[in-house]
Image (cartoon, rainbow, N blue to C red; front, side):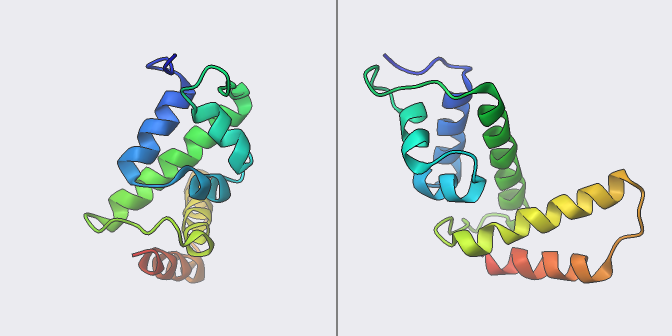
Length: 123
């Protein structure tokens, strides 16, 4: 049994493959489910596969989208997703910038500088 084409599990599996990110690294970056639970959800084996809860799937798809945006910002240089400690900082700072814009707040220069440094560190 293979995963359904448009299922969250397939979208996550495909996204991770496109980003060249191992599932266990994604588990640590996203912080939504454990490594073993992620492996269950991404498994093609019907004896192992367990569908994600919708809220978990949505949260992981959001993180995956942020990872794609980060990769697009970096450009053609592939991100080393094993550097989880560095990777998690960049999306967090980018989220803060998005919230500032949504709330029409004055951009925090220090956070903008920190975001740029974080992005440089994942190259």
